[in-house]
Image (cartoon, rainbow, N blue to C red; front, side, top):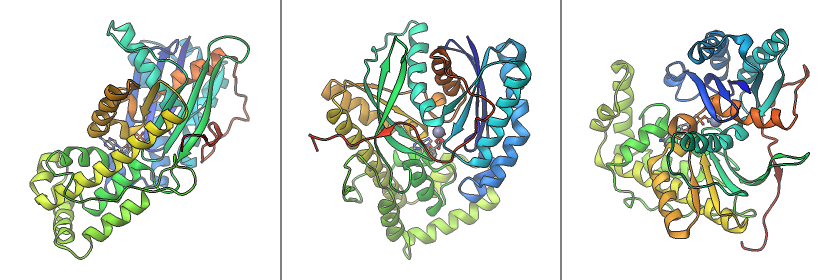
Amino acid sequence: MLVLGIESSCDETAAAIVADGERILSNVVASQVLTHEKYGGVVPELASREHLRKIGPVVDEACRRAGLALKDVEAIAVTEGPGLVGSLLVGLVYGKTLALSLGKPLVGVNHLEGHIHAVLLENKLARRAGESVDEIRFPVVTLVVSGGHTSLFRVERRESGANSGFTYQRLGQTRDDAAGEAFDKVARLLALGYPGGPVIDRLARFGNPRATQFGRIKMKGNPLDFSFSGLKTAMLYRVRGTALATEAEERRAWRKTAGRVTPEQIRARCSQATLDLVASFQQAVVNDLVERTLAAADSARVDSVFVSGGVACNSLLRERFVEAARQSGLGVFFPSPALSTDNAAMIAAAGFYKLASGSRADTSLTVYASSPLGVTSRLRGRE
Ligand code: KG4
Ligand code: ZN
């Protein structure tokens, strides 16, 4: 089945055509980074306007690259939420209109479910390419970690029967900022650029992660919840009124006139103290993400862990998970960077399974801002 996926939940307008949930025929992403860069974060009104401009050309390009006409597409899967409502509406209305006019089935996909399916899709692609990859054994624990989300799910798969498909149990989530949001805000504080994650990842390699010891993040109540706002505030106190702040203001002024700059140019304008602080911050976030995910895997008694979402591109996070997997015997699975960040191939892949299990949306399909994915439940017994 050829599924056209459409994704517009945040600042990426994306369309992809995926065959049978496992073969990517095209995967087009139009980024809005240049639009939002000067604000240091996504401006919702600008994002909707950009989606409106790009949705048509991006869908056309996905068909062109796949060598198909729109009428050859057999079904349409569109992100229904969570995300920015104005942005989501652009993709959803476009997908709904296409489905109606072409007479094709439509299905709505939760964005987080898409990120989870990116891992399965990656695994299938690697198998098709003849790579030796570990087998995924369900149930798994998934960490979805991006600019908008930091959540842990236990995912089960039923392969046959009337209830075939995936079920999601939410084990924990952030109570304030998402991890990617913390990267972006710290990068803004230090005038390092936008989005913050990739640049901090690059700069942290040159800093000493032990230079500043941030305390472990303690959670009252559910130990599988996250909180990054305290760490963000601790960073603010380390910078405010110090030489680091003066240095950041100099960088900010330089960036205003410099146009597009490379990470190397940014690094050349960072003192060792800034690089050390950035490395310490990254380590604190990564330690917390890895520890809670491993604790979730232990409590949920699973053998495999998925890590997905934009922050899953982080090199230290990947290293730490691979190391933890080696030590504990857990299977750890990531999508490639292109499938980790927002894309529509993951939406088409998730949509394929929903369509295969008989799910169909009608014209009442609409968007939602926050995530209803999974029953929320607290694991007990091993806290
Ligand atoms: O999944 P995504 O493309 O969009 C959302 O659903 O939010 O994730 C974007 C987020 C941004 O906050 C960005 O700073 C972060 O992912 N990110 C990273 C890295 N690459 C992207 N964070 C840390 N290290 C990276 N290498
Ligand atoms: Zn995302």
